[in-house]
Image 1 (cartoon, rainbow, N blue to C red):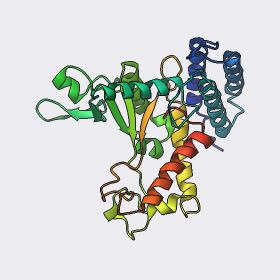
Image 2: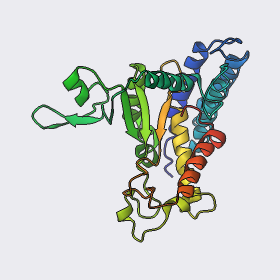
Image 3: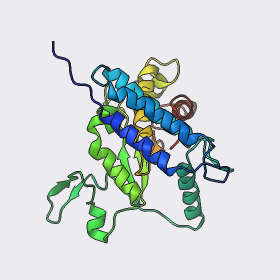
Image 4: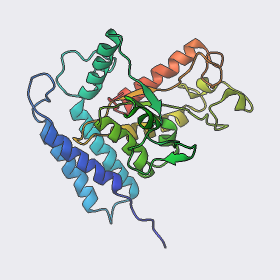
Amino acid sequence: HYTAPVITTLLSAAISDANNLAAYIHEGTDQGTFPAGSREKLIAGISAAQAVLNNSELATQSAIDMATEQLYDVMTNVEKSVVLSDKGLIDMSATKETVFLYKNLQYLSAGSKYLFGMHDATAYGINQGGSSWYDDGSATKSDVKQITGSHPAVFSQDVYDIIEYEPTTLTNYRHRQTKAYQEGGVITLVWHMDDPVNKTFYWDQLSPSYNVVASLLPGGMHHEWYKANLEKLAFYIKGLRSENGTSIPVIFRPFHEHNGAWFWWGRTRCTTAEYNAIWKFTIEYLRDERNVHSF
């Protein structure tokens, strides 16, 4: 009887991230510090995860996955306890880096400054002469850089990939975000969300057409399907971390271009109340139920 090997890649990465975070944080009562005992909590979480990893031959894949998520939750719980007198966000447990990104965006906009961005900037493009290029895993090339000499300030990618592919296959996808962040870029995620029936995000491709937004709301026939997708997103986001182990802040843009009518969440495809409700549910589920605090 063949048993597929247990994949421990993500758990190993989580342990590395947790060690980096433990070495990075400072405890105290000043702004930007963490409550006393924060490092101790991280070390305890690392020990528990390491124990599972050391017994990986006996552990199931589900046990490895659970240990990975538990360790990322330990890290998130420490990060959200940061001492900040004014977070200014609807998420009062937002991480320090998330708060700083938000405040820096406010600062820039108050001075009428703009950040230029591009979707999939370092993922693919066009060479001089018209041939296509694709990221080789280094995330060093972009059409913007070829023309202007530097990458854009804002890097956009699609949640679609996170939902459609297994976390272990998203190495290059994740690397493009972490590299851009380490170089000072702002990360944003849009979501071209397929509906659960027709597997399309375009309204005119729904056959038969139906109110997808209503079906995703609590009590809707596809509500559990939507929650499962949000759980995958949450798992990925809690593991999206910088070199020092901190959560990378993300501008999250679900249900974009609502004023148009081409997507199934467009203004003529659901009511205003339904659109507001799916936004509120999405925020509250990720924040309050899945412990995401870097959006």
